[in-house]
Image (tube, rainbow, N blue to C red):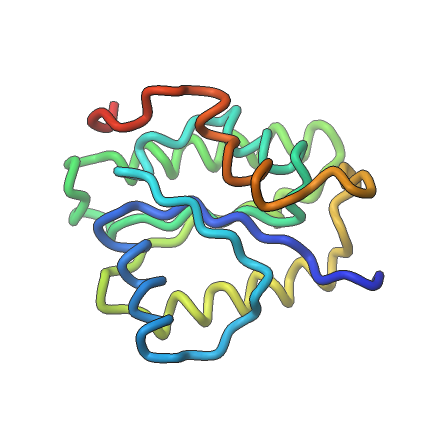
Length: 161
């Protein structure tokens, strides 16, 4: 590969996936340090342009992690997110980027171990694929990756659409 680990950006819903990531940390579970977690009120807030911008800003892989299907705090936000993830995968394939670099997962707040497993599996997958073809040296940094949503929609604190 190269001298750097692949960078993963995880869009996590506040109620389940972010809580699972927090639990993984509290449990001191070991998983790759290459994931940057971006907390959202709901994965229903994830727009296709956010997913594609993550790659543009230097992410090698993107995870969208939300509540269990049927258990979304905003009723169907995670179902909306799944449709957007599938469309973004189609767009990635159309422009010649492996759609496997993007994946949606559903987990509960009690699944800290599963969060750690997801990050490990995605890191292995991205290592097999190699760094993103969109990666440009020096482009990515934590601040740029963390500001993707803020640049696109400054008033993110509202309810999910």
